[in-house]
Length: 331
Ligand code: AVI
Image 1 (cartoon, rainbow, N blue to C red):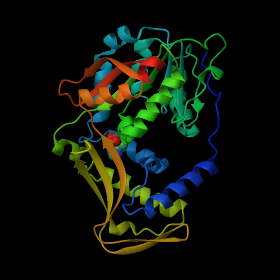
Image 2 (tube, rainbow, N blue to C red):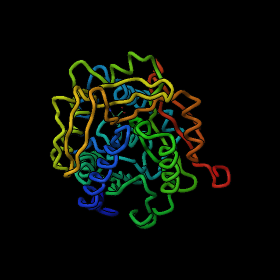
Image 3 (cartoon, rainbow, N blue to C red):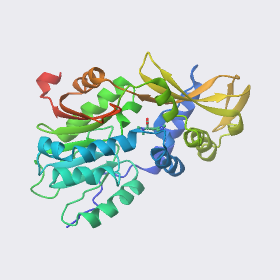
Image 4 (cartoon, rainbow, N blue to C red):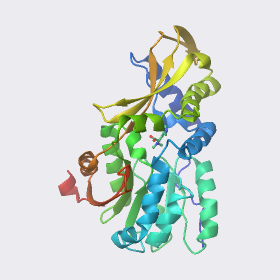
């Protein structure tokens, strides 16, 4: 009885395109040029990211899958069965079934801004879990979402488990991450739990290799953002004169990705002219890494009290289960 297809709200393509344009123009106008990482993910960018997750150097995906698989029984005991699972981002074919098998949910609600990815993610799950109500929501999960309106009758007030794997939280500045965690708490409601993947701080060479692989897939992923600007915003960024750089910033505990100008250059985007000097960069991504204390501080700031943490044997990655705090405690 899979009941896919009721979508909460279409995010109009025009609105998204206008936002892309505004954020690129604003980001390139700053003294330190920067473009939000979420614009990496057009179709080509998403394909390249999938390729990244299979690279030898990129440990997070397979390490998180290993934790979810090895600790399935413990996770099952900790979350209990019969919750509505709300996944933030379209479900991944490898991670989501591990949780669906462990938690035996009453319904599964994947939320993603891209209807295409939602449909691709839901189709195989509908085949594998024919009895499970699957309710995709095409929406921006950065904002609170009224889940009740989507759920089959009688399921509105069931307790929920949020699932946010992949350490995607790390791509946000701490303040934005806290806002997102608060918004998730509102979406999920009182009594809810959150299972979240968080990448751990580790030696610089391991981190820098994960974001600058030998085959150049991450470089292509980074450069695709400039190519996307050229394609969609009538840009003339000289792709051959931009180079990928991934560097560990110890002060902020994050990997930063930049596009570095190899020579002085001028280019246009949407009819506006921009200049870069040789060595100047466009900052394209932050990927924050956490230790136990910083993970816990972030979650508490977002209104979530950590209950359990599972790590791999080498302490590369952690999966944290947290409980929604009451309004008085989290204020
Ligand atoms: C999606 N996100 C968690 C990835 C990360 O590791 O920060 C994005 C990525 N950027 C380069 N490689 C992977």
